[in-house]
Length: 101
Image (cartoon, rainbow, N blue to C red; front, side, top):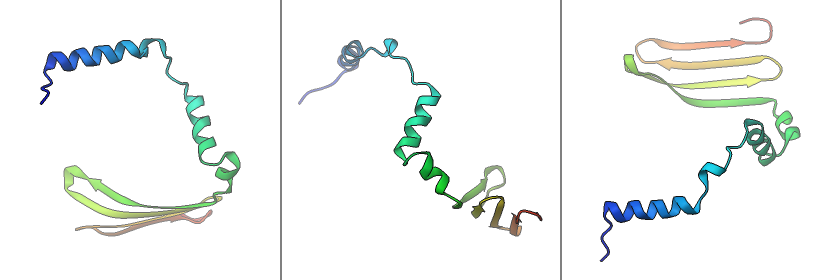
């Protein structure tokens, strides 16, 4: 059985840190991160093909102890709807059809 003490763990970490040159590595720029992400998901053309999105989640107001499922649908060019049922409050809905909110 091998027992790892604080001193052996610290020595191992120092050994690893000396092998990696964290201080010499510059963090990637935000533009590089976004470019890699766009490339990974299929490129700008793939992103522009998306014309609608449906999001399902949970909305919480922790200080009031409220939690409610939320569903939001958005569609190009400018339509959206959102609905949820808050316990003790009731059904809440909002939307926009391009002209009327």
